[in-house]
Image (tube, rainbow, N blue to C red; front, side, top):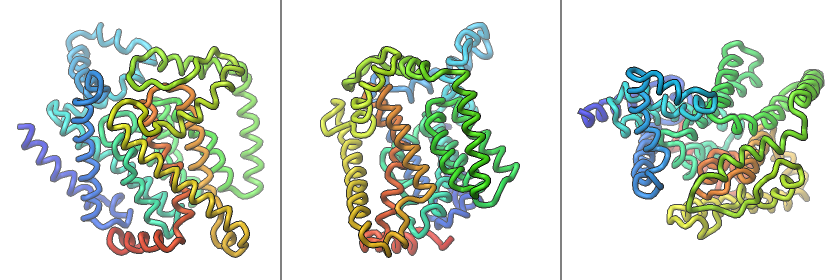
Length: 414
């Protein structure tokens, strides 16, 4: 029964990917859309198999799936236990993926492979939303836009039923709606959708939402005219003063230390060196070098103890190699005013990408001491770290040839 249901859903999803108007507006050929979606689904199934084989206790993926049956039974037959499992806001937010599995189980009859397929379809919509933003914010550069689908760590961690996939979906639609607001002016539809997406991000991972705020503010501010910028800046200063009254600056290290303690107490085989915060500014500052190393550069080759970490290590080396090359090229081109006029060093959206990536990766490095958790939490940020630098290389002959081929064979003109 499950096999027949899986085949049916595969056909329906493939048809939807090729025919939905929102997806077709990406400009990607229908056949390529189906290939990209198929790659996403196959990666999700592979991730499930790897988790079963290599992760302790089969990892969160299988744990959430198995608990979804227990929570369903408690909801309908032992409600007192259901209440005890959801008695605090922390439990309610932590159980979000379990609730999602409970909904997907209604459609899949309790099959993880089908849940992964249906979840992949939802995440793919977020991919398309983000792709459409990248295609317009990084013009004449399909290679940077297609990195949304093909960057290995992003593909691997967002393809299974997990928080990263949900966050990627929500982030795609959040940025899509903000992009529309900045380009076309205020709209209740896009404004409401952006607010809903941001609230949902807070629910699934509040720390992720916090890293978005400064980057979104800079992007929004750069998209306004001078008078509106002054008004927005004044409002922001007033908001910061209110926040400082609610939570003084002296409390910030305490909040970060509590967040770190949530991870320090966990058990894992890939622990890295990370000083324990005591809630003071002094300990926070002393931990910054470790946070920068762990959040931006781990896993180094050989770190973590698992063979799979080599793949993420090599990917990270390749990303930093491209970044260093792009920086050196920009420094060299500073002597050529004509080049700098034709190629802005950093656009407003590029600044958003870098701020978002930097704050996110730094927060990961300062709170998480495990290689496995770092590569998962950092996966989405890695895309935004790479994108502006990859875009700056688009005029090189090799990247021009790649972009021309992508435009010719993978997508229509937008």
